[in-house]
Amino acid sequence: MGNIFSRLFQRLFGNKEVRVLMVGLDNAGKTTLLYRIKEGSMIKTVPTIGFNMEQIEVNNLKMQVWDLGGQTSIRPYWRSYYQKQEALIFVVDSNDRERFSTAKTELLSILQEEELKNTVIAVFANKQDLPEAASAAEVSLALGLDSIKDRTWTIISTSAAKGDGIAEGFEWIASQLKH
Ligand code: GDP
Ligand code: MG
Image (cartoon, rainbow, N blue to C red; front, side, top):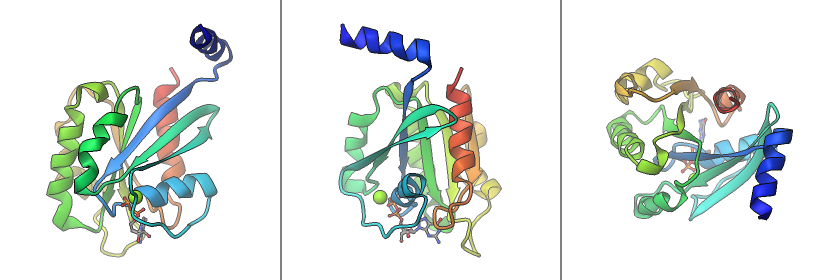
C-alpha cells in the first residue's frame, strides 16, 4: 500500500529515483568516479569489497549509483544487483589496452543479462588525463560498440582523477531516463 502511494507521489511530483549500475573491470576507476560525483573531490580509494551506493541528483532526477566491486572473484555477485537498474555505466581504463578484449567480453556478457536488457548504456572511456590513454573512438572500436544493436548507448571521455566528463555522462543518462 505504502508503495503504491509513494509511486503515485513520485509520478505526480516527478520525484522519481532511478538506479544506475556502474560496472567495469577492476582498476577502471569506478570507485573514484563514485566519490568524485558525491564529494566533488578526489579521495584515496581502496579496492572495493562488495559494493558502494551513493545518491545524487542530476537535473532534478534522483539517482542511486551502485558501484560493484570489479574483482573477478566477486563478479558473479553482480547479478544480485541487476534488478530494477535503469542505466548501466561501463567504466573502461583507457590506458589499459591489454585488457580491452577482456573488457569487451565482460560488457557483452552483461548486455546479455535479461534483467539489464532495458538499460541505457554509457561507456566511460576513463583516465583520459593519462598521456598514452586510448581515445574514446579507439575504446569504442576495441569494445565493438558499433555492434550493439537495439540499445541506446553512448561513449564519453572521462577523467575521474580530474573530474572531466563525469557531469556530461550523468547528464546524458538523466536526459535518456527523463521521458
Ligand atoms: P575500480 O577498481 O574500478 O573501483 O577503480 P578505482 O576507482 O579504485 O581506481 C583504480 C586506480 O586508478 C586508483 O589508483 C585511482 O586513483 C586510479 N584512477 C581512477 N580514475 C582515474 C583517472 O581518471 N585518471 C588516472 N590517472 N587515474 C585514475
Ligand atoms: Mg572499486
